[in-house]
Image (cartoon, rainbow, N blue to C red; front, side, top):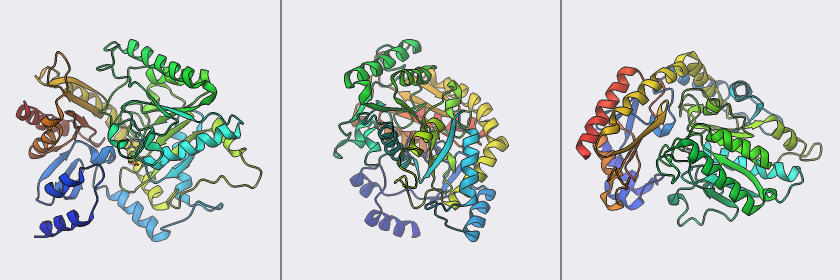
Length: 448
Ligand code: PLP
């Protein structure tokens, strides 16, 4: 009864992100009621293994009382403190310091946002400010990768390269460009990783030559492309892009909104290749989804230019009311304690077990590729293994997979093209991985 009335209210009033609104009116909502560890319970009482950590964000898992206590204590003591006009709060300062300690060498400064989209948008504004401060006012163009996702804000959605986020919204903007995705399975130079890397770096150099390096402000990439289908670039690709950016005097931005906080093993995926970006964007796992928060991490060499960009006493005109929100920051501090107190170690060991077990699906009839790093992985289904042909849209393979998976007690990201994306909480145990594998097995058996 309660569920029925909620469903009616939902259809009448709540606009959900990234759904067909008409389809949602027909299909209705699935209400998630509670969570514990890696499991969710819906309003019908079904218990589901959350193979997707909410939306790649609940890295610590559900039901941690210590996180809830940290939030409640901060809310009681001081629910809000502005960061504007030289004010601040203890949790925001401590969290910034911890992040600076964890970030790559030379990345020492933190600007807090509410999530990933406004972190990317903040970077865009700060990059422009940086080049203007350096007197290189023609450097306005941004380059990103096809299949990349950098949020759905007004400007940042132009760096995103998924057609769904462009069509009908008049993006990307004139100064936003995309080069091919370093996808070893689909790039014409693949599957050889070095060849794919070299080809995409060359595409970058060609694009810069076309625009003129003096007109290019920044390049942005995810260490693993999440929303584009969990595409894992060849080892060494990010480092090669960083080197090309440095050589051409272009800022190098790494978007770690998904890959941060143990998702691929270490706290930051930058660690795999020893990257030292000019900017890093983070969100999601920063608070494990218990409270909204994102951040821009900024290299000191960039900070110094921006800090000198205005005359003494003139403010940097960029701010958000909830930047450094003390409750979110208190949550972030407690979450980091959990990560450092064993969950990162778990992400390393269980992540290796997870990718090994997932690889068992490689020889299944519809499986084109199994790929991943740590606890971020995908199985790409194809209609023909030899030609790698994707399923036609009318096969509705994604929605069917989601529905079958749910019936089998597992939530994963069912991409429309038939890719299954996985990002379970990083506290997942080997036994829970075995259960996940069993449920994916049942799902693939049913779809073939
Ligand atoms: N950047 C990346 C790599 C993301 O995956 C996302 C969200 O999934 C964003 C940015 C946007 O973050 P948010 O949804 O918190 O605005």
